[in-house]
Structures are given as C-alpha cells and as structure tokens.
Amino acid sequence: MALTFTTLPALKHIPKLIVFDLDFTLWPLWIDVHSHGGPYTYSKSTNAAIDRRGYHVQPFDDVPKVFGYIRNTLGCGIAIASRTSTPDRAAEVLRLLELEDGTKMIDHVVHPQMYPGSKMTHLRRLATLTGIPHHDMLFFDDETRNKEVEQLGVTFVLVDDEEGVTEEAFCRGLLSFERWRKELNLKADDPDTHGRRPPRHGKGRSG
Image (tube, rainbow, N blue to C red):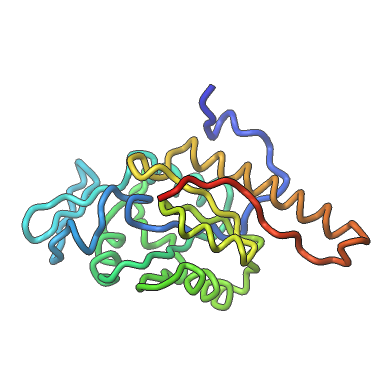
C-alpha cells in the first residue's frame, strides 16, 4: 500500500527544517541548462513559469501538495540547498510557482542557499542562519554524492530524478527522520557513548 499523508503513522519526532534541492527534486530540469532565463511569465492553468523562449518550468506533480503539508500540518521551516549557477533564475521561478492554496513557493522558503559547491556548505550555512542543529534537519536531493551531509547529522533522502519529491517519498523521509532521532536519543541515553552522536549509516544508490 502506498504511503500517503493520511496513512502516515503518528510521528513523535518532526524535523525543524526540511531542505530541498531544486533540479530534478522540485522540478524536472536543470534550471541553468534547460531554461533560457527571464523575464518569466506565469501560467496559472498549468502552474508553470514560462521563460523568454516559451519553455515551461513546472514543479513535479506532488511538490505543491508537499509544501502545503509542511506549512499547514507539520508547521516547520522549508529551505532550499541548490548548487545552481543561475540563482537569480531559480529565485524568479520560485516567486511565480504556486501551492494549492495560491500562495507562492518562495513565500514559504527561509534563507535559500543557491550557489555552486558542496551541499555541506549549504547545510552548514543554514544551521548558522536558522540556529537549527543539523540533527533536526531533513534533506531531499536526487544526487547520491550529496549523501555526504549525513556526516553533519542531517537526515538525507535520495529521490528518484524522474519523479522528484512525491507524497510517498516525502512520507518515507519523515519516517527515516523518526528512526534517526530515536536512534540518536537511545545513544544519548547510553552511558557508554558519553553523549556522543553515533555515526550515520545507510544505503544509497549510485548516481
């Protein structure tokens, strides 16, 4: 049975910050390669940002629903960590795309980190700006190499680059975060660990 927001078990631990990559995670393209740049116009009928050559940038189908669930049910922060080389282009698209309630995606994003480089840098910067520790962050990305953020204590979820963040993938990410926090709490209570955090382990697909 598919995991959905209605079948998701009750969670004891909820992330304080949920972080998303952009390309092939929130939308099915590289914004700095496939899109030709602005000015962009908005198509409400398709929830798409249309670039100056008529190319449509749309979120993956479940993304507006996922953002709405975070905002209305979980109540935690949303952030972006992207190594795009065209942050202005990405920001303009985020200012146009909408959630199901008609609000803009960008209005729900705190401290977007959009610049080339390791995602370790992006996540460290987010921790500094928000004051939220890495072990309270959940990160969705389509590239296996970005699993390195687990070294910081971030819960990493690898998404399918053909589907992006689906409702089911998001729910499985919440369950992964729940398991990690339970493990962390058990280790913290173990006198043999002296409060040290355990190393992160997990399987990931090759990119």
